[in-house]
Image (cartoon, rainbow, N blue to C red; front, side, top):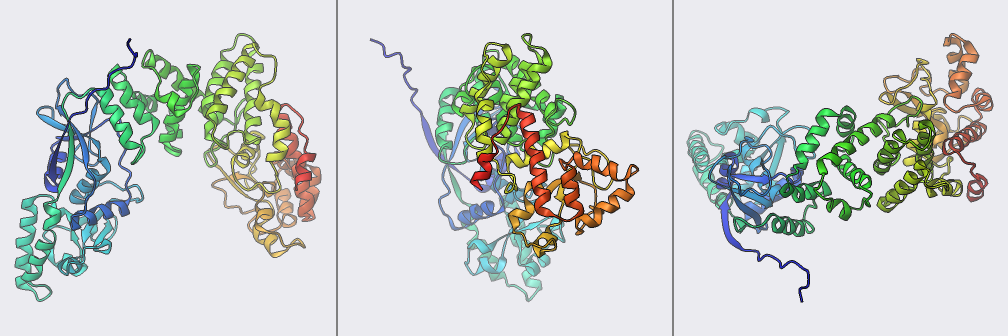
Amino acid sequence: MSSGLDTPDELEVSLTNKDVQKLVQEIDEGKIVLPDFQRDFVWPTGQVGSLLESLLNGYYINTLLTLPVTGGGDNVPFPPRAVEASSGAIADSGQLEMVLDGQQRITSIHYALTAPDLALDNTKYPQLFGLSFSDVILGALEDDTIQWKSTHYGIWDDLQPDDYATQIEKDFIPFTIFRSKDSFDDWRYGMEDYANETDEISVDDVRAFDRQTRVFRNYGIPIIEMKAGTSPATVVQTFERINTQGLELGIFDILTARLYPKGVQLRNLWADALATNSDIKEYADTTDEKRLRKHLLKALALYRDKECKDESVGELSGTQFEDDWDTTVQMVNRALEKAQSASAGGFGVTEKYGFPYSTLLPPLANLLHLAENSETYPRHESLEMVQRWYWASTFSRRYSGSSDTISYKDYTEGRDWIRGERTEVPEAIQDASTVIPVELDLSSLTRGGPYSGIMSLLVLNDARDFGTFESITVHEVDDHHIFPDAKLKNGATGTKYGKTARNQILNRTVIESQNNRFNIRDRLPRDYIPDMIDAHPRGEAGIKDLLQGHFINEDGFEALLSDDYERFCQARKEELRNEIEHRIGASVDWAVSEEMV
Protein backbone atom coordinates (compact mmCIF):
# COMPACT_ATOMS: atom_id res chain seq x y z
CA MET A 1 0.00 0.00 0.00
CA SER A 2 1.30 3.43 -0.88
CA SER A 3 2.04 5.73 2.05
CA GLY A 4 1.15 8.81 0.02
CA LEU A 5 4.45 10.44 0.91
CA ASP A 6 6.95 11.70 -1.66
CA THR A 7 10.26 9.90 -1.74
CA PRO A 8 12.96 12.41 -0.78
CA ASP A 9 15.57 13.28 -3.41
CA GLU A 10 19.12 12.19 -2.65
CA LEU A 11 21.29 15.25 -2.06
CA GLU A 12 24.53 14.97 -4.04
CA VAL A 13 27.40 17.27 -3.11
CA SER A 14 31.13 17.65 -3.73
CA LEU A 15 33.86 19.47 -1.82
CA THR A 16 36.19 22.13 -3.15
CA ASN A 17 37.81 25.41 -2.07
CA LYS A 18 38.64 28.84 -3.45
CA ASP A 19 41.27 31.35 -2.25
CA VAL A 20 40.21 34.86 -1.30
CA GLN A 21 41.72 36.54 -4.35
CA LYS A 22 40.02 34.13 -6.75
CA LEU A 23 36.77 34.68 -4.84
CA VAL A 24 36.98 38.46 -5.28
CA GLN A 25 37.89 38.09 -8.96
CA GLU A 26 34.91 35.85 -9.73
CA ILE A 27 32.53 38.13 -7.81
CA ASP A 28 33.74 41.05 -9.93
CA GLU A 29 33.32 38.99 -13.10
CA GLY A 30 29.74 38.13 -12.14
CA LYS A 31 30.54 34.42 -11.90
CA ILE A 32 29.69 34.20 -8.20
CA VAL A 33 26.10 35.30 -7.62
CA LEU A 34 23.34 35.10 -5.03
CA PRO A 35 19.80 33.80 -5.32
CA ASP A 36 17.34 36.65 -5.35
CA PHE A 37 15.71 35.48 -2.11
CA GLN A 38 18.90 36.02 -0.08
CA ARG A 39 18.66 38.71 2.56
CA ASP A 40 20.75 41.87 2.14
CA PHE A 41 24.28 42.30 3.46
CA VAL A 42 23.91 43.20 7.14
CA TRP A 43 27.24 42.59 8.85
CA PRO A 44 28.60 45.57 10.83
CA THR A 45 32.27 46.57 10.99
CA GLY A 46 33.07 44.37 14.00
CA GLN A 47 31.89 41.18 12.33
CA VAL A 48 33.77 41.97 9.14
CA GLY A 49 36.88 42.60 11.24
CA SER A 50 36.47 39.31 13.12
CA LEU A 51 36.21 37.40 9.85
CA LEU A 52 39.39 39.04 8.54
CA GLU A 53 41.20 38.12 11.78
CA SER A 54 40.14 34.48 11.35
CA LEU A 55 41.43 34.42 7.78
CA LEU A 56 44.74 36.00 8.79
CA ASN A 57 45.27 33.29 11.40
CA GLY A 58 44.04 30.43 9.24
CA TYR A 59 41.07 29.68 11.47
CA TYR A 60 38.12 27.68 10.15
CA ILE A 61 35.31 29.96 8.99
CA ASN A 62 32.68 27.36 8.01
CA THR A 63 31.85 26.28 4.49
CA LEU A 64 30.04 27.99 1.69
CA LEU A 65 27.15 26.17 0.05
CA THR A 66 26.88 26.71 -3.69
CA LEU A 67 24.83 25.50 -6.62
CA PRO A 68 26.35 25.45 -10.13
CA VAL A 69 24.13 27.09 -12.75
CA THR A 70 24.65 28.19 -16.33
CA GLY A 71 24.71 31.90 -17.00
CA GLY A 72 21.78 32.84 -19.21
CA GLY A 73 20.70 29.21 -19.23
CA ASP A 74 17.47 27.43 -18.38
CA ASN A 75 18.78 25.58 -15.35
CA VAL A 76 18.75 28.62 -13.05
CA PRO A 77 16.20 27.66 -10.35
CA PHE A 78 16.03 31.17 -8.84
CA PRO A 79 16.64 34.63 -10.26
CA PRO A 80 20.31 35.53 -9.63
CA ARG A 81 21.52 38.82 -8.27
CA ALA A 82 24.99 40.25 -7.95
CA VAL A 83 26.92 40.31 -4.69
CA GLU A 84 26.32 43.64 -2.98
CA ALA A 85 28.85 46.38 -3.81
CA SER A 86 30.23 44.44 -6.79
CA SER A 87 29.95 45.73 -10.35
CA GLY A 88 26.38 44.47 -10.51
CA ALA A 89 27.00 42.53 -13.70
CA ILE A 90 26.10 38.85 -13.94
CA ALA A 91 27.89 36.67 -16.50
CA ASP A 92 25.47 35.65 -19.25
CA SER A 93 27.33 32.50 -20.23
CA GLY A 94 29.52 29.83 -18.69
CA GLN A 95 29.20 28.30 -15.25
CA LEU A 96 28.12 30.46 -12.33
CA GLU A 97 28.26 29.60 -8.65
CA MET A 98 25.08 30.57 -6.82
CA VAL A 99 25.93 31.00 -3.12
CA LEU A 100 23.12 29.59 -1.01
CA ASP A 101 24.89 29.91 2.31
CA GLY A 102 27.81 32.24 3.05
CA GLN A 103 26.63 35.54 1.60
CA GLN A 104 27.72 37.58 4.61
CA ARG A 105 31.21 36.05 4.52
CA ILE A 106 31.88 36.47 0.81
CA THR A 107 30.47 40.01 0.77
CA SER A 108 32.66 40.94 3.76
CA ILE A 109 35.79 39.62 2.03
CA HIS A 110 34.93 41.41 -1.20
CA TYR A 111 34.16 44.61 0.74
CA ALA A 112 37.51 44.59 2.57
CA LEU A 113 39.55 43.90 -0.58
CA THR A 114 37.76 46.34 -2.89
CA ALA A 115 36.69 49.22 -0.58
CA PRO A 116 33.39 49.98 -2.36
CA ASP A 117 31.41 53.17 -1.91
CA LEU A 118 28.94 51.50 0.46
CA ALA A 119 28.21 52.12 4.13
CA LEU A 120 27.98 49.10 6.41
CA ASP A 121 25.02 48.22 8.61
CA ASN A 122 26.30 50.24 11.56
CA THR A 123 28.00 53.11 9.73
CA LYS A 124 26.89 56.24 7.93
CA TYR A 125 29.81 56.30 5.50
CA PRO A 126 31.89 53.69 3.62
CA GLN A 127 34.77 52.11 5.51
CA LEU A 128 38.36 51.30 4.53
CA PHE A 129 39.72 48.18 6.23
CA GLY A 130 43.42 47.87 6.95
CA LEU A 131 46.18 46.22 8.98
CA SER A 132 48.60 47.61 11.54
CA PHE A 133 51.98 47.17 9.83
CA SER A 134 53.86 47.19 13.14
CA ASP A 135 51.61 44.48 14.63
CA VAL A 136 51.77 42.23 11.60
CA ILE A 137 55.57 42.15 11.31
CA LEU A 138 55.73 41.13 15.00
CA GLY A 139 53.23 38.31 14.37
CA ALA A 140 50.50 39.93 16.49
CA LEU A 141 47.54 38.93 14.32
CA GLU A 142 44.82 39.82 16.81
CA ASP A 143 41.61 41.80 16.66
CA ASP A 144 43.43 45.09 17.34
CA THR A 145 45.53 44.46 14.25
CA ILE A 146 42.43 44.90 12.07
CA GLN A 147 41.42 48.55 11.70
CA TRP A 148 38.77 50.42 9.75
CA LYS A 149 38.51 54.08 8.85
CA SER A 150 35.61 56.12 7.53
CA THR A 151 36.38 57.31 4.00
CA HIS A 152 34.35 60.44 4.73
CA TYR A 153 37.12 61.95 6.82
CA GLY A 154 40.74 62.95 6.31
CA ILE A 155 43.02 61.01 3.99
CA TRP A 156 41.14 57.75 4.00
CA ASP A 157 39.02 58.41 0.92
CA ASP A 158 42.12 58.83 -1.25
CA LEU A 159 44.73 56.52 0.30
CA GLN A 160 46.47 54.94 -2.68
CA PRO A 161 48.16 51.48 -2.64
CA ASP A 162 51.46 53.14 -3.60
CA ASP A 163 51.32 55.87 -0.95
CA TYR A 164 53.87 54.01 1.14
CA ALA A 165 54.92 56.98 3.28
CA THR A 166 51.37 57.65 4.52
CA GLN A 167 50.76 53.93 5.15
CA ILE A 168 53.82 53.67 7.36
CA GLU A 169 53.18 57.04 9.05
CA LYS A 170 49.61 56.03 9.92
CA ASP A 171 50.58 52.39 10.57
CA PHE A 172 47.74 51.35 8.27
CA ILE A 173 48.08 49.03 5.27
CA PRO A 174 44.77 48.85 3.33
CA PHE A 175 43.36 45.43 2.58
CA THR A 176 42.94 46.56 -1.02
CA ILE A 177 46.58 45.59 -1.64
CA PHE A 178 45.43 41.93 -1.40
CA ARG A 179 42.82 42.25 -4.15
CA SER A 180 44.91 40.16 -6.54
CA LYS A 181 48.33 38.52 -6.70
CA ASP A 182 49.56 41.27 -9.01
CA SER A 183 48.29 44.07 -6.75
CA PHE A 184 50.10 42.57 -3.75
CA ASP A 185 53.32 42.03 -5.69
CA ASP A 186 53.23 45.64 -6.89
CA TRP A 187 52.73 46.82 -3.32
CA ARG A 188 55.48 44.58 -1.90
CA TYR A 189 58.12 45.62 -4.43
CA GLY A 190 57.15 49.26 -4.07
CA MET A 191 57.29 49.07 -0.27
CA GLU A 192 60.76 47.41 -0.48
CA ASP A 193 61.94 50.30 -2.65
CA TYR A 194 60.53 52.73 -0.10
CA ALA A 195 62.33 50.83 2.69
CA ASN A 196 65.61 51.30 0.86
CA GLU A 197 65.02 55.05 0.81
CA THR A 198 64.03 55.56 4.46
CA ASP A 199 65.10 54.64 7.96
CA GLU A 200 61.51 54.13 9.15
CA ILE A 201 61.27 50.48 8.08
CA SER A 202 63.57 47.85 6.61
CA VAL A 203 63.29 45.44 3.70
CA ASP A 204 63.20 42.67 6.30
CA ASP A 205 60.11 44.28 7.78
CA VAL A 206 58.39 44.19 4.38
CA ARG A 207 59.36 40.54 3.92
CA ALA A 208 58.03 39.75 7.40
CA PHE A 209 54.73 41.36 6.40
CA ASP A 210 54.76 39.15 3.29
CA ARG A 211 55.29 36.00 5.37
CA GLN A 212 52.71 36.88 8.02
CA THR A 213 49.97 37.56 5.46
CA ARG A 214 50.65 34.56 3.24
CA VAL A 215 48.07 32.44 5.05
CA PHE A 216 45.44 35.09 4.35
CA ARG A 217 46.32 35.41 0.67
CA ASN A 218 46.32 31.65 0.13
CA TYR A 219 43.38 30.83 2.41
CA GLY A 220 41.27 28.18 0.72
CA ILE A 221 37.65 28.88 1.62
CA PRO A 222 35.89 25.50 1.92
CA ILE A 223 32.93 25.02 -0.40
CA ILE A 224 30.21 22.39 -0.48
CA GLU A 225 28.89 22.30 -4.02
CA MET A 226 25.46 20.86 -4.73
CA LYS A 227 25.03 18.92 -7.93
CA ALA A 228 23.92 20.96 -10.92
CA GLY A 229 20.26 20.37 -11.64
CA THR A 230 19.28 19.77 -8.00
CA SER A 231 15.53 20.38 -7.80
CA PRO A 232 14.40 23.82 -6.58
CA ALA A 233 12.34 22.18 -3.81
CA THR A 234 15.42 20.39 -2.47
CA VAL A 235 17.46 23.59 -2.67
CA VAL A 236 14.85 25.57 -0.75
CA GLN A 237 14.43 22.88 1.92
CA THR A 238 18.20 22.63 2.38
CA PHE A 239 18.48 26.38 2.51
CA GLU A 240 15.79 26.68 5.18
CA ARG A 241 17.48 24.03 7.34
CA ILE A 242 20.78 25.88 7.15
CA ASN A 243 19.24 29.20 8.05
CA THR A 244 17.62 27.89 11.22
CA GLN A 245 21.16 27.76 12.60
CA GLY A 246 22.56 30.96 11.14
CA LEU A 247 21.22 34.34 10.06
CA GLU A 248 17.52 33.60 9.92
CA LEU A 249 15.77 34.50 6.72
CA GLY A 250 12.56 36.45 6.86
CA ILE A 251 9.33 34.90 5.67
CA PHE A 252 9.45 37.19 2.62
CA ASP A 253 12.78 35.66 1.57
CA ILE A 254 11.59 32.10 2.08
CA LEU A 255 8.39 32.74 0.13
CA THR A 256 10.40 34.38 -2.66
CA ALA A 257 12.30 31.12 -3.06
CA ARG A 258 9.22 28.92 -2.87
CA LEU A 259 7.18 30.92 -5.38
CA TYR A 260 9.86 31.37 -8.05
CA PRO A 261 9.42 27.87 -9.53
CA LYS A 262 5.70 28.76 -9.83
CA GLY A 263 6.59 31.74 -12.02
CA VAL A 264 6.06 34.33 -9.26
CA GLN A 265 8.93 36.78 -8.75
CA LEU A 266 8.09 38.27 -5.38
CA ARG A 267 10.96 40.73 -5.24
CA ASN A 268 9.83 42.25 -8.54
CA LEU A 269 6.28 42.50 -7.22
CA TRP A 270 7.58 44.30 -4.13
CA ALA A 271 9.66 46.69 -6.23
CA ASP A 272 6.56 47.49 -8.31
CA ALA A 273 4.55 48.06 -5.12
CA LEU A 274 7.11 50.61 -3.92
CA ALA A 275 7.22 52.33 -7.30
CA THR A 276 3.48 52.71 -7.74
CA ASN A 277 2.12 53.22 -4.20
CA SER A 278 3.24 56.43 -2.53
CA ASP A 279 2.02 55.61 0.97
CA ILE A 280 3.72 52.20 0.98
CA LYS A 281 6.93 53.81 -0.32
CA GLU A 282 6.86 56.57 2.30
CA TYR A 283 6.14 54.14 5.12
CA ALA A 284 8.94 51.80 3.98
CA ASP A 285 11.39 54.72 3.82
CA THR A 286 10.55 56.07 7.27
CA THR A 287 10.12 52.82 9.21
CA ASP A 288 11.28 49.29 8.47
CA GLU A 289 10.93 47.94 4.93
CA LYS A 290 11.49 44.34 6.01
CA ARG A 291 8.73 44.56 8.61
CA LEU A 292 6.34 46.18 6.14
CA ARG A 293 6.90 43.39 3.61
CA LYS A 294 6.07 40.86 6.30
CA HIS A 295 2.92 42.74 7.30
CA LEU A 296 1.84 42.87 3.67
CA LEU A 297 2.17 39.09 3.33
CA LYS A 298 0.22 38.60 6.55
CA ALA A 299 -2.48 40.89 5.17
CA LEU A 300 -2.56 38.72 2.04
CA ALA A 301 -2.97 35.59 4.18
CA LEU A 302 -5.93 37.18 5.97
CA TYR A 303 -7.40 38.23 2.63
CA ARG A 304 -7.29 34.54 1.67
CA ASP A 305 -9.00 33.73 4.96
CA LYS A 306 -5.91 32.04 6.37
CA GLU A 307 -4.09 32.55 9.66
CA CYS A 308 -1.13 34.89 9.44
CA LYS A 309 1.37 32.83 11.40
CA ASP A 310 4.74 32.54 9.67
CA GLU A 311 4.17 28.89 8.77
CA SER A 312 0.84 29.75 7.13
CA VAL A 313 2.30 32.70 5.25
CA GLY A 314 5.22 30.55 4.09
CA GLU A 315 2.77 28.08 2.57
CA LEU A 316 0.78 30.62 0.55
CA SER A 317 -0.16 29.10 -2.78
CA GLY A 318 1.17 30.52 -6.03
CA THR A 319 -2.27 30.15 -7.61
CA GLN A 320 -3.64 33.61 -8.49
CA PHE A 321 -0.89 35.02 -6.29
CA GLU A 322 -0.24 38.10 -8.38
CA ASP A 323 -3.94 39.05 -8.45
CA ASP A 324 -4.25 38.63 -4.68
CA TRP A 325 -0.96 40.47 -4.18
CA ASP A 326 -2.20 43.44 -6.22
CA THR A 327 -5.41 43.60 -4.20
CA THR A 328 -3.49 43.38 -0.92
CA VAL A 329 -1.06 46.10 -1.98
CA GLN A 330 -4.00 48.39 -2.72
CA MET A 331 -5.57 47.53 0.65
CA VAL A 332 -2.37 48.22 2.59
CA ASN A 333 -1.69 51.44 0.69
CA ARG A 334 -5.23 52.60 1.44
CA ALA A 335 -4.88 51.60 5.10
CA LEU A 336 -1.65 53.60 5.39
CA GLU A 337 -3.33 56.57 3.73
CA LYS A 338 -6.22 56.42 6.20
CA ALA A 339 -3.95 55.72 9.16
CA GLN A 340 -1.82 58.80 8.51
CA SER A 341 -4.80 61.07 7.93
CA ALA A 342 -5.87 63.62 10.54
CA SER A 343 -9.25 64.20 8.88
CA ALA A 344 -12.54 62.56 9.81
CA GLY A 345 -12.21 58.81 9.47
CA GLY A 346 -8.43 58.92 9.81
CA PHE A 347 -6.34 57.43 12.61
CA GLY A 348 -3.81 60.23 13.17
CA VAL A 349 -0.77 57.92 13.02
CA THR A 350 2.24 60.23 13.16
CA GLU A 351 5.55 59.84 11.40
CA LYS A 352 7.41 60.16 14.70
CA TYR A 353 5.42 57.67 16.79
CA GLY A 354 4.02 55.37 14.12
CA PHE A 355 1.27 52.84 14.74
CA PRO A 356 0.56 52.02 18.38
CA TYR A 357 1.37 48.45 17.28
CA SER A 358 2.54 47.87 13.72
CA THR A 359 0.95 44.41 13.86
CA LEU A 360 -2.44 46.16 13.65
CA LEU A 361 -1.78 46.85 9.98
CA PRO A 362 -2.73 43.45 8.43
CA PRO A 363 -6.19 43.19 10.04
CA LEU A 364 -6.74 46.94 9.68
CA ALA A 365 -6.08 46.80 5.93
CA ASN A 366 -8.52 43.94 5.48
CA LEU A 367 -11.25 45.38 7.69
CA LEU A 368 -11.05 48.80 6.02
CA HIS A 369 -11.27 47.11 2.64
CA LEU A 370 -14.40 45.28 3.74
CA ALA A 371 -15.92 48.40 5.31
CA GLU A 372 -15.33 50.58 2.27
CA ASN A 373 -16.81 47.92 -0.01
CA SER A 374 -19.62 46.79 2.27
CA GLU A 375 -23.13 46.44 0.88
CA THR A 376 -24.79 45.37 4.12
CA TYR A 377 -24.50 48.58 6.13
CA PRO A 378 -24.17 52.21 5.20
CA ARG A 379 -20.50 52.83 4.58
CA HIS A 380 -20.05 55.20 7.52
CA GLU A 381 -21.40 52.61 9.97
CA SER A 382 -18.99 49.97 8.71
CA LEU A 383 -16.06 52.36 9.00
CA GLU A 384 -17.14 53.27 12.53
CA MET A 385 -17.00 49.55 13.41
CA VAL A 386 -13.36 49.44 12.25
CA GLN A 387 -12.58 52.58 14.26
CA ARG A 388 -14.04 51.07 17.43
CA TRP A 389 -12.01 47.88 16.97
CA TYR A 390 -8.80 49.83 16.31
CA TRP A 391 -9.00 52.06 19.37
CA ALA A 392 -10.18 49.23 21.64
CA SER A 393 -7.20 47.16 20.53
CA THR A 394 -4.83 50.07 21.01
CA PHE A 395 -5.78 51.03 24.55
CA SER A 396 -6.25 47.45 25.78
CA ARG A 397 -2.75 46.62 24.50
CA ARG A 398 -4.30 43.74 22.60
CA TYR A 399 -1.45 43.66 20.08
CA SER A 400 1.43 44.19 22.49
CA GLY A 401 2.58 40.56 22.34
CA SER A 402 2.34 37.72 19.86
CA SER A 403 -0.62 38.70 17.72
CA ASP A 404 -0.94 36.31 14.76
CA THR A 405 -3.78 34.30 16.31
CA ILE A 406 -5.47 37.46 17.58
CA SER A 407 -5.20 39.06 14.12
CA TYR A 408 -7.05 36.18 12.51
CA LYS A 409 -9.71 36.14 15.24
CA ASP A 410 -10.22 39.89 15.00
CA TYR A 411 -10.39 39.77 11.23
CA THR A 412 -12.97 37.00 11.06
CA GLU A 413 -15.13 38.47 13.83
CA GLY A 414 -14.87 41.96 12.35
CA ARG A 415 -15.61 40.67 8.87
CA ASP A 416 -18.76 38.89 9.98
CA TRP A 417 -19.82 41.91 12.07
CA ILE A 418 -19.41 44.28 9.13
CA ARG A 419 -21.28 41.94 6.81
CA GLY A 420 -24.14 41.65 9.27
CA GLU A 421 -23.51 37.93 9.74
CA ARG A 422 -22.67 38.51 13.41
CA THR A 423 -24.80 40.52 15.81
CA GLU A 424 -22.47 40.23 18.80
CA VAL A 425 -19.80 42.90 19.18
CA PRO A 426 -16.30 41.44 18.49
CA GLU A 427 -14.26 40.25 21.44
CA ALA A 428 -11.74 43.10 21.09
CA ILE A 429 -14.46 45.65 21.84
CA GLN A 430 -16.35 43.51 24.36
CA ASP A 431 -13.27 43.00 26.50
CA ALA A 432 -12.01 46.57 26.22
CA SER A 433 -14.31 47.91 28.93
CA THR A 434 -12.74 45.66 31.54
CA VAL A 435 -9.24 45.25 30.10
CA ILE A 436 -8.42 48.91 29.49
CA PRO A 437 -8.66 50.02 33.14
CA VAL A 438 -6.32 47.18 34.08
CA GLU A 439 -3.82 47.76 31.26
CA LEU A 440 -3.91 51.55 31.02
CA ASP A 441 -2.73 53.79 33.85
CA LEU A 442 -2.47 57.26 32.35
CA SER A 443 -0.57 58.52 35.42
CA SER A 444 2.36 56.22 34.68
CA LEU A 445 2.15 55.99 30.89
CA THR A 446 5.42 57.28 29.42
CA ARG A 447 5.86 55.18 26.26
CA GLY A 448 4.45 52.28 24.25
CA GLY A 449 1.40 51.66 22.12
CA PRO A 450 -1.21 53.56 24.18
CA TYR A 451 1.21 56.52 24.39
CA SER A 452 1.42 56.62 20.59
CA GLY A 453 -2.35 56.20 20.46
CA ILE A 454 -2.93 59.27 22.59
CA MET A 455 -0.54 61.27 20.42
CA SER A 456 -2.74 60.21 17.49
CA LEU A 457 -5.87 61.33 19.37
CA LEU A 458 -4.30 64.75 19.88
CA VAL A 459 -3.67 65.11 16.15
CA LEU A 460 -7.23 63.96 15.37
CA ASN A 461 -8.57 66.44 17.93
CA ASP A 462 -6.98 69.27 15.93
CA ALA A 463 -4.44 70.08 18.63
CA ARG A 464 -2.75 73.33 17.66
CA ASP A 465 0.80 74.43 18.29
CA PHE A 466 1.36 76.51 21.43
CA GLY A 467 3.52 78.97 19.49
CA THR A 468 2.07 79.31 15.99
CA PHE A 469 -1.52 78.42 16.95
CA GLU A 470 -1.65 76.37 13.74
CA SER A 471 -2.87 72.79 13.26
CA ILE A 472 -0.25 70.05 13.54
CA THR A 473 0.07 67.49 10.75
CA VAL A 474 1.07 63.86 11.18
CA HIS A 475 4.39 64.61 9.46
CA GLU A 476 5.39 67.61 11.60
CA VAL A 477 4.60 66.38 15.09
CA ASP A 478 6.87 66.48 18.10
CA ASP A 479 5.99 66.49 21.78
CA HIS A 480 6.92 68.44 24.87
CA HIS A 481 6.21 68.85 28.57
CA ILE A 482 3.36 71.12 29.57
CA PHE A 483 4.84 71.63 33.03
CA PRO A 484 8.63 71.81 32.36
CA ASP A 485 10.57 68.74 33.43
CA ALA A 486 13.26 70.71 35.26
CA LYS A 487 10.73 72.71 37.27
CA LEU A 488 8.90 69.59 38.45
CA LYS A 489 12.18 67.86 39.29
CA ASN A 490 13.37 70.79 41.38
CA GLY A 491 10.07 71.25 43.19
CA ALA A 492 9.15 74.63 41.68
CA THR A 493 5.44 73.83 42.11
CA GLY A 494 5.86 72.89 45.78
CA THR A 495 6.62 69.16 45.30
CA LYS A 496 9.59 67.38 43.79
CA TYR A 497 8.37 64.79 41.27
CA GLY A 498 10.08 61.63 40.11
CA LYS A 499 10.87 60.79 36.49
CA THR A 500 7.65 58.88 35.75
CA ALA A 501 5.43 61.54 37.28
CA ARG A 502 7.19 64.23 35.25
CA ASN A 503 7.07 62.34 31.94
CA GLN A 504 3.57 60.84 32.17
CA ILE A 505 1.34 61.29 29.14
CA LEU A 506 -0.83 63.67 31.17
CA ASN A 507 2.05 66.16 31.09
CA ARG A 508 2.90 65.67 27.41
CA THR A 509 1.33 67.07 24.27
CA VAL A 510 2.11 67.70 20.62
CA ILE A 511 3.77 70.67 18.99
CA GLU A 512 5.14 71.36 15.51
CA SER A 513 8.49 69.64 15.05
CA GLN A 514 10.00 72.88 13.71
CA ASN A 515 8.83 74.99 16.65
CA ASN A 516 11.58 76.09 19.05
CA ARG A 517 9.26 75.87 22.06
CA PHE A 518 9.63 79.66 22.50
CA ASN A 519 6.45 79.97 24.49
CA ILE A 520 7.41 77.33 27.05
CA ARG A 521 11.14 76.71 27.37
CA ASP A 522 11.65 76.20 31.11
CA ARG A 523 8.82 78.44 32.21
CA LEU A 524 5.89 77.33 34.32
CA PRO A 525 2.36 77.60 32.84
CA ARG A 526 1.44 80.62 34.98
CA ASP A 527 4.27 82.46 33.16
CA TYR A 528 3.76 81.34 29.54
CA ILE A 529 -0.05 81.02 29.39
CA PRO A 530 -0.58 84.81 29.86
CA ASP A 531 1.91 85.41 27.02
CA MET A 532 -0.08 83.02 24.80
CA ILE A 533 -3.28 84.90 25.68
CA ASP A 534 -1.69 88.22 24.76
CA ALA A 535 -0.45 86.82 21.44
CA HIS A 536 -3.69 85.12 20.35
CA PRO A 537 -6.10 87.23 18.22
CA ARG A 538 -9.04 86.04 20.35
CA GLY A 539 -7.27 86.38 23.68
CA GLU A 540 -8.25 84.09 26.55
CA ALA A 541 -11.19 82.55 24.65
CA GLY A 542 -8.87 81.58 21.82
CA ILE A 543 -6.37 79.94 24.16
CA LYS A 544 -9.12 78.03 25.95
CA ASP A 545 -10.30 76.70 22.60
CA LEU A 546 -6.74 75.81 21.68
CA LEU A 547 -6.24 73.94 24.96
CA GLN A 548 -9.45 71.98 24.39
CA GLY A 549 -7.70 70.48 21.38
CA HIS A 550 -5.08 69.17 23.82
CA PHE A 551 -7.78 67.69 26.08
CA ILE A 552 -7.34 70.47 28.64
CA ASN A 553 -10.73 71.65 29.95
CA GLU A 554 -11.73 74.68 31.99
CA ASP A 555 -10.58 73.06 35.24
CA GLY A 556 -7.27 72.19 33.61
CA PHE A 557 -6.90 75.76 32.39
CA GLU A 558 -7.39 77.12 35.91
CA ALA A 559 -4.85 74.58 37.20
CA LEU A 560 -2.30 75.81 34.66
CA LEU A 561 -2.72 79.42 35.78
CA SER A 562 -2.16 78.42 39.40
CA ASP A 563 0.66 75.92 38.66
CA ASP A 564 -1.40 73.21 40.37
CA TYR A 565 0.16 70.11 38.80
CA GLU A 566 -1.94 67.52 40.63
CA ARG A 567 -5.20 69.25 39.77
CA PHE A 568 -4.11 69.68 36.16
CA CYS A 569 -3.23 65.99 35.72
CA GLN A 570 -6.51 64.88 37.24
CA ALA A 571 -8.52 67.21 34.99
CA ARG A 572 -6.69 66.07 31.88
CA LYS A 573 -7.02 62.42 32.87
CA GLU A 574 -10.80 62.80 32.92
CA GLU A 575 -10.79 64.37 29.47
CA LEU A 576 -8.61 61.62 27.98
CA ARG A 577 -10.71 58.91 29.59
CA ASN A 578 -13.86 60.43 28.08
CA GLU A 579 -12.20 60.51 24.67
CA ILE A 580 -11.13 56.87 24.90
CA GLU A 581 -14.68 55.81 25.79
CA HIS A 582 -15.97 57.85 22.86
CA ARG A 583 -13.52 56.17 20.45
CA ILE A 584 -14.31 52.60 21.51
CA GLY A 585 -18.04 53.29 21.76
CA ALA A 586 -18.34 51.80 25.24
CA SER A 587 -18.13 52.78 28.91
CA VAL A 588 -15.05 51.83 30.90
CA ASP A 589 -15.00 51.06 34.62
CA TRP A 590 -12.12 53.38 35.50
CA ALA A 591 -12.62 52.66 39.21
CA VAL A 592 -10.70 49.42 38.62
CA SER A 593 -7.70 51.45 37.51
CA GLU A 594 -7.90 53.74 40.56
CA GLU A 595 -8.08 50.76 42.92
CA MET A 596 -4.89 49.32 41.43
CA VAL A 597 -2.86 52.50 41.98
